[in-house]
Image (cartoon, rainbow, N blue to C red; front, side):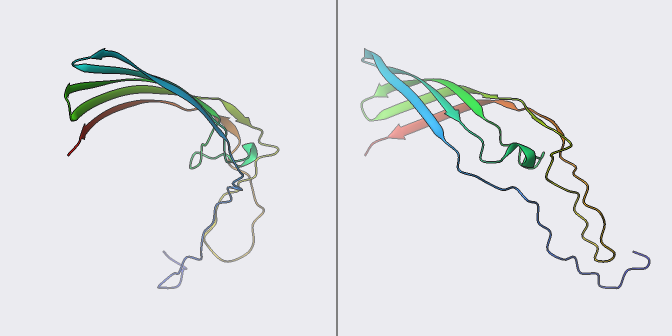
Length: 140
């Protein structure tokens, strides 16, 4: 880069996240509906709180409060073999970060005249997702 020394070393870059304790609440159950071949149905719900204060949310750390609902089935075609499948949906709660209280500023890796920090993480954050799973258990 014209005007920069060669080699140009970039100082350590840090993005504040201000992690805090979070909580998780879970409830689930399983029911055997057939014995031979064995068929087990499962369902569960999970609620988790965010570990990041609202003003520190960024696209890099969009950790939101969320609710997960899950269902699954296990099939035992042989006495020592179980095959499992699951589906879960994660419902992320939408959060607004007010630009006036946003706490994450643009990173400037160039040393020189200090610049005024300018928050860049204001806006609306939302997420959701689907989870599919397959599993197999073989006992020896």
